[in-house]
Length: 178
Image (cartoon, rainbow, N blue to C red; front, side, top):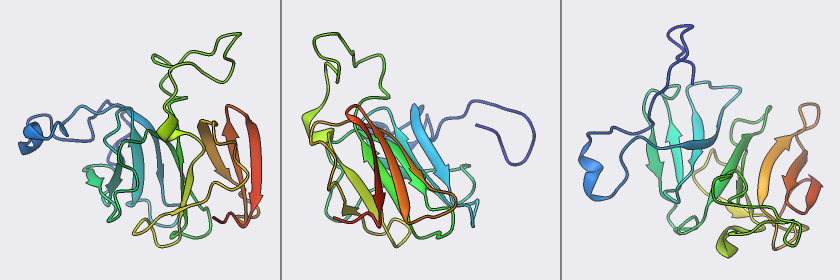
């Protein structure tokens, strides 16, 4: 994490370690798996954490973070692995699932090259938001149902093309849809 206020790199939790959320378990420090900020509004960004707490949002360049809870509870009990913004449209975001980035808990053996200790609820899912995260649509067409999503990349020349790196190979989409 690099503070926008200085050129100094420092470690910082995304939640208040001494905050009132002690009863919910949602207090710092949280280990961030992935984060991304809007290319049009650097104050706005999302991050995923190592636990199954969910998705966190910031509106102040990461100085403070709030847990995002979708109305339909779509992310409950799911490991969220990666987040990616559309480089041209600040309203479009992609969210991938899986434990592949949790390298301390997932193994890739010769007999099980796609992973041991994976989480079935967290496999084969990519969500897309077209309203800056107010709502998310599951868009997993063409993804192996057992895949862990490692990363998502929106083509910087054509944001209608989206790439996903998974434990079952890479996939690309044009106009990612449900």
